[in-house]
Each structure stands twice: as structure tokens, then as C-alpha cells.
Amino acid sequence: MELIKDTTDFHIEGPTAVAIGKFDGIHKGHRKLISDLIEEKNNGRKVVIFTFDPSPASFFAGHIVPGLSTRQEKRAWFSENGIDVLIEFPMNAETAATPPEEFVKRFLVEQMGAAYVAAGLDVSFGDKGKGDWKLLSQMGQELGFETHLIDKVEIEDQEVSSTLIRKEVAKGNMERVSRLLGSPYTLHGTVSHGRALGRTIGIPTVNVIPSEEKLLPPNGVYYSIVRVGDKILRGMTNIGTKPTITEEKIIVSETYLYDFSGDLYDKDISVSLLSFKRPEMKFSGVDELKAQMSADVENGRLYHHSLETSKYNWNE
Image (tube, rainbow, N blue to C red; front, side, top):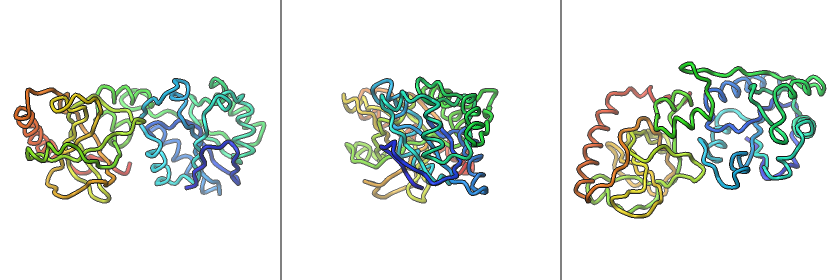
């Protein structure tokens, strides 16, 4: 996959099939749209995703607004799923003020060679988001590119959207989040050294400090699955600040791995949160913490044994 970033001065040799959007979470609605684009490879068209960096939410807020996907997670997903070119369009005062008509002519047609543009009814682009589906389809007729409207995906009588999924993540409803995304909600990171308290009390954990770009669910204990390379391991994950141990407010993901022994320091891992068990608690001391963690570990073992591997839907 070719990555174009940090520039507005680019050129892609067409014809291309293009989708514009934030693609936060790359949920089932996004996947339906991308599947439509991939079909255009049969017509000799390169598949191009046009997204923004920083996200419009972060740009207009003036600081990082955590989302469902980090920049690196999006890049990895697009690369693994047939996208030919990913454009991370620089979001700044000048580009944000681009008139939507100029956006279509200059970027879509002249610089990207768009022959086919797929979008939902909620597509927006250009100054103040004034560019919409109606303008896109009109300009497609004028400038000679096809437009294809992608219907929304509905699950449990609700339209799948990044906004809806963010609300469910904030509630800790991880099973529903998995259904809306099409795969479990996953944190990626490199295993770091912690205080090694878990090891001293017989419950060792692997620690990852989540990216500041990643929206986190409520602090607490989750049943999880961990991927290390080609291995998939059952886990129990605590997300939080470890209030029994420290007054620091750094949020850490700590995962106990079932039936595993080995050194994962400095390894890249993926922690998928399957189900919320309980909120994070401050205990009277290490002994009470150990007793609760031991109970959590046993409950987690029962939870994992009740599930089939196919439940995890890794490749949807």
C-alpha cells in the first residue's frame, strides 16, 4: 500500500475508486463501503482511501480527541485489506477552508484521477463540511466520474456509526461494540516493564500503555484475548491507574495470560476486550488486592472455557 501524508501536493495515476471519510473504528458500515470499492479493481481502478490527519475533531478542538482507531491501526487495517493508496490529508486552517467545489475538482479529479466515488448520505467535505452527497453526485455528472451511494448498515434497529460505537465503548458494552465493529475492540502496544507486583504475588501481567489517540472504556477488569504474532492467548485485563499501588494517574493495560509462561517485554501485542467484569477498585492493601485478582482469574477461566474460538471473529 502506498501512503501519502503531510502534503497536499500529490498525484495518483488514475483511474481510481475513492472513498472519503474519517474511518474511525472501521466498523461494519465502513467495511461495506470498502468492499464496494474493492470490487472496482475488476474494472482496472486503484482503490484509494482519503482521510484526514489530524482528525477533524482533534483539529477543531485544538488537542487530541481519542477515537476508536489510532493512526497506526488504520494504516495496518487498510494495508491488510486491499487498499492501494491511503491519503492522510493534512488538516490545517488553509485546507479546512477549501471550498467543496474546489476540493472535488482539484483533489478528487485532478490529483487523484477519480473515476468512481463511493460514499454514504452523511459524507461531508470542504469548508465547514458544506460538501455533501448531493454536491458530489452533481459534480460527478459534470466532471465525468461515477458516484455510488452506500446504504447504512443497521444492527439491532440502529444505524451503525462511529458515534454510536464511541458511546458503547464509554459504557463498557464490549459485546455490543464487537457486533457493531465486526471484531473485538482492540488495544495495540508494546509490552513495557511495570512494577512487577503481579509477579511477586503469583499473578504476572503484561503491561501496555495505550496510545493517547485511543478511546478507552471505563477503568476496570475485562475478559480478553491477546494476540502475539500468530499466537492467540486467553487473558484477563485490567485497565486503570492501579489506585491500590500508586497515586500516579497514568492509565495502563495490564493483562494476565492463561496457561502461558515466557518473556514478552518489548513485543508488540494486541489486547482485545471481550466483556466487562467489574470496575477498578482501591483495596486496603496488597493482600486484599491479591485475593480479588485470584477470584477474577478463576472467573475468567470459566468465562473463556464457555466460549468457542469462533466467537472472536478475527477476520470479519
